[in-house]
Image 1 (cartoon, rainbow, N blue to C red):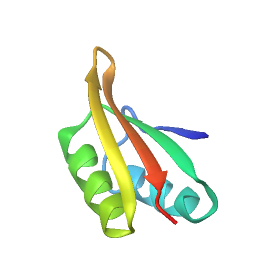
Image 2 (image 1 turned 135 degrees about the horizontal axis):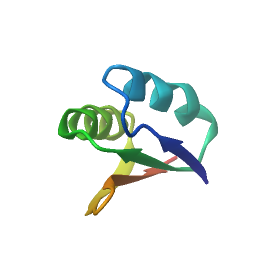
Image 3 (image 1 turned 120 degrees about the vertical axis):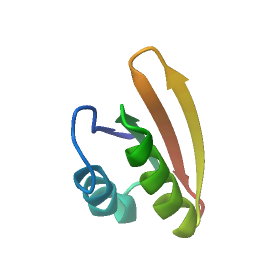
Image 4 (image 1 turned 60 degrees about the horizontal axis):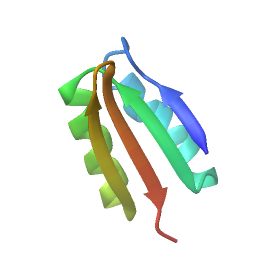
Length: 69
C-alpha cells in the first residue's frame, strides 16, 4: 500500500501526486488537511473507478483508495 502525505500542500499538487501513483497501485492512503484536497482527490479517484473511504482524524483526513480493477 502506498501512502501519500499531502498535509500542508495546496491543490493542485496533492491531486497531481495521486495521479502519478494511481495507475501502478492497488491501494493508496492519502493524508490531507484541506477539504478542497479531499473533495478534488475523492472526485478524481471515483471518476477513475476507485472505491474511496474518507475518515476524519485528529491530524486531518485519511482517504483510503482502492483500485477497482
